[in-house]
Length: 129
Image (cartoon, rainbow, N blue to C red; front, side, top):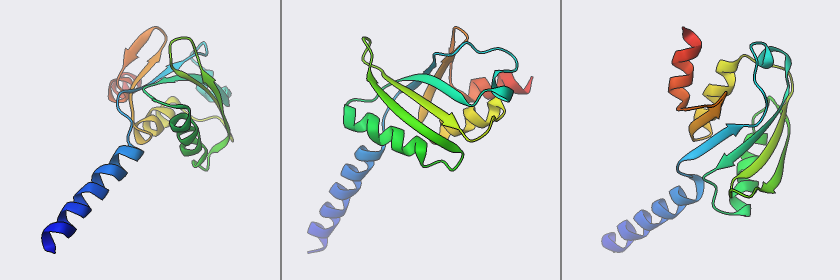
């Protein structure tokens, strides 16, 4: 009986972790980012690659909306490259570090902006300099 319960628990853990984890998520910022963008802008347009289905993209948008600082999030569907276009609007503007830390919490592996593709940690190191 212990063996059956152990196997069942392991299978449930594997299945549930697969449901909530995407791998190699990349945010590509579609907006032109300038020095004061984050201090003044509340609405952002991103392309998210690494999502495998429309349902997963909808769940990811719901995950974005679960942040109390997000006013709205719209999943605009898949683009020609297979990434999902997502627009989100914040309640108020925040510093760039806020968005980078939030992306890490959302499981983002890479952020591409200003022609550079870096991990969130690399972007944070650059912001601190």
